[in-house]
Amino acid sequence: DTNTNSVAIQLSDVHVGTDLFVWLDGVWRQTYDDHLWALEPGDIVHVIGDDTNGHLQCSDGISNLVIWHPDELISATTVAGTQECMRRAVIQQEFGAASDPNMKCVAGNISHEVVQACLTMKDFSHDFCSKALTSVLARQSSSVFALGDLATSDVITSLVHPVLAG
Image (cartoon, rainbow, N blue to C red):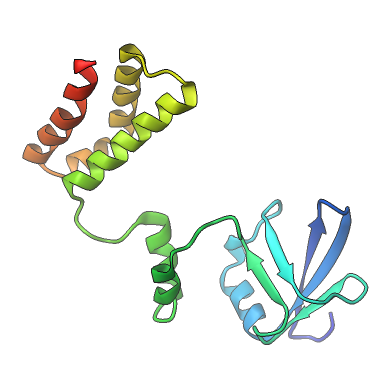
């Protein structure tokens, strides 16, 4: 340790084949301690700063930056929501906003998954689309049922009829 309040994380540069030890103090240490679950072996981390012989000190949140999961897009609204409560922003990002489901969102999610399956398999045949829709409806059944009886038939009608019409 550089001091007793620091924690070191070892990062590997897969492109160069070297290791970098990043010492976290202050706000960086607090963030790391509060979110141990967010950083696991194999995760992508970007480090911006000057290292000294394979060591980098991050303490003030201004000089030297550690960016966890830079490959995940986070909206400006989500970032702004962290000012009030960091956990709420993470929960909304992972599980969506805590609001009542609506038919357009559920139907949109289901149709997106069906199209994604067709694109992945490069198969837009009537048979494959029907199978993909059946599979997605089974996985999304809780979302569909949360809409209620009338909305459930609306979702199924809006998705099944176009597929069956071929």
